[in-house]
Image 1 (cartoon, rainbow, N blue to C red):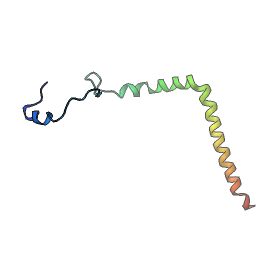
Image 2 (cartoon, rainbow, N blue to C red):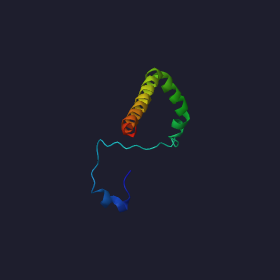
Image 3 (cartoon, rainbow, N blue to C red):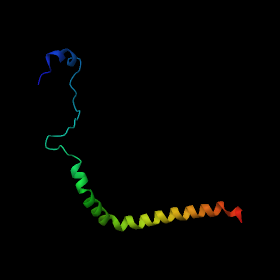
Image 4 (cartoon, rainbow, N blue to C red):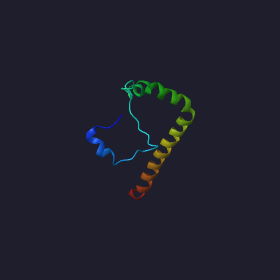
Length: 82
């Protein structure tokens, strides 16, 4: 499709770009986020079931380490009180 007659001089300054990818929404995809929102609970449950054996112990270990570190830090800084 040729540019408008008024824009021929403007567009003649720019050469064609090769290898550039442009993305746009098709008319059939006017709600691109709706599918993400509707499937998010199912995907979250599935991911927890698939990776739960690794994630749950790692999370418990992380929380335990942080709580132990905070308690040890408080104990160290309160030694001069007694």
